[in-house]
Image 1 (spheres, helix red, strand yellow):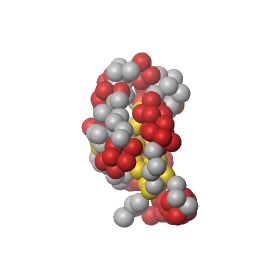
Image 2 (image 1 turned 90 degrees about the vertical axis):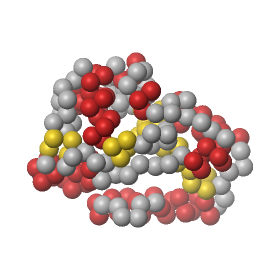
Image 3 (image 1 turned 30 degrees about the vertical axis):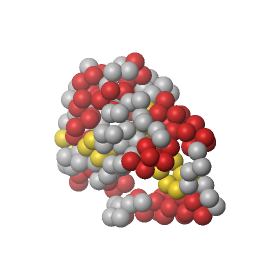
Image 4 (image 1 turned 120 degrees about the horizontal axis):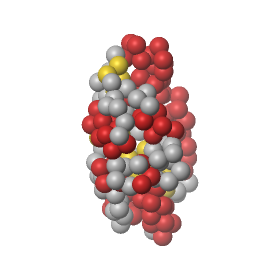
Length: 173
């Protein structure tokens, strides 16, 4: 799952790896979704994350190097249906085709909302506010590849990029 994960993520990752292993051993399929957006999500127009961005409260921590992979709710639904219709086993990443670092997508998202551009925050200062886990989340995530999901499920995301779905749908406006 994560080869060099931040120390703070290890307990959660270990639990997820155990569940994934049990599911695959039982002959099942695991669908890993990216950051879900769309109606009812944190990224929706009335979502919690969107409100923080509008208020200028989401900085680029340590340079914003975390790479996010996104999944629109509609794409998650079509992947679930595809998985139910196919004899598939294993772990599949259900994400768009365009993993992007925070320092790339957050300013675009903020601009689309008419929000202030995100400020830079040194990791040491941010650690005081959000702890080591929060800093790792904002600066050390790595993106995911959807090639196996595309092949195994014969699935294509409707929103191939967060640039298409996250910034132009009314959910984010």
